[in-house]
Image 1 (tube, rainbow, N blue to C red):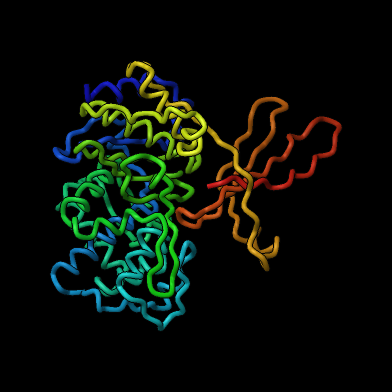
Image 2: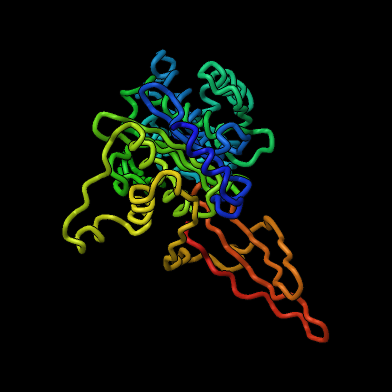
Length: 378
């Protein structure tokens, strides 16, 4: 049965799998570590901000050994402060409490804090990355190599869906007293208010961690843990085209994983209006597709939900926004097809995707101007 999902996914055309060539997934039984499903589980992928799970593992390990305590403070260096968003934005030379650093990593996915923690534990981020890699190998993550503490783009930093699910499980098993840090949707620590990037908290029954991630090269990734009726399942997903698609797919895999462990589907609320209010469409459709259809018919079909774009922060000029955009890919279609340039702000898992479409050149016609950029929700 565990081999069923990979076989089904392999039979689907590439276009049907989320993120296309970047797609990978893994479903794990938390109790035994056994694979329950997934596709391309050992294919190399970029971890993006899932890297911060390893940074946190190293921090929790140092706290257990007494090298760092809750009374310690994390120093923000010039090097740490120089990292691009998502970041906490603490001025260089200042310090933050350890609990603030933990929430900044688990919820805000702050790149500057990740570097600061790495420097506190390893002296330099480069040395800390070597320590992370060595510890990862000890945990059984044989196909993972770290080059930084944050997950910001590095061609040599690689992992797999299996390894990231393994790391999520080890965080749960090795540091149960710290697990609550991953399960908050909103919280205030010190002078900071944090909102979690993991939208599945409170949306999918039983989810209580772990982490999300995003950079251009990886697409939208996550590692999710959920428990129901005494069973716990870990799921990792790589290569989503949007955070909504990624979360929808993770919900499908969680449903199937629980089903394989004998956990019955969640009872629906009789009142349809209440059910719609409590269960977002993205998860209701994913759950229906998994529960009502036979497993052999499970397909990886993109479900895209369009939401109004959030307004730009006040005081932010259009020129400043354009300066933060960088080209990612250029695709040229067949005859008379449009040339599309996709540009992405590399801001960790807080990045916002912007697409610019330029009509193709036609004979005896002047080239058209590029259409206005349309923001796409993360």
